[in-house]
Figure (spheres, one colour):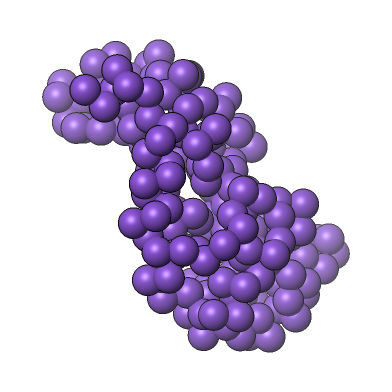
Length: 185
């Protein structure tokens, strides 16, 4: 490809993990990037956890989808079991948002995440908050070991559409039903 890219991933603010600096939702940024990408395929990413979001992604010009949070609910996922249970019980409205280097983070509630939100409200810098979160080690502590006293667990806003722990194959098969027939062929 002319720009040296085989594919572009259009990631909106609905994603989990390190959230983008621009507060632009996936379904707003996706057509903007599709229009700018020309012939380069664009994958939609962020908040895609059910067939409605898959269909919307293709309707907005995506050539494919990039899934994160939906697959964290898979039986095969290494996510701590107590965090998997929270993943299926909570929704987007339960998520905490705070500034931390390089931009924003989102987490389910817990001792450390609540503290990070309080630091943010008190005016701490992103660097200070990221240090208090133990940088990326905090995500490891929360998500892999299930310890929200010392870590955080970050998910995309598609969390609202996840209601069961299932095999990855079942999750993929369900999401694939949202792919339009003209794309499958």
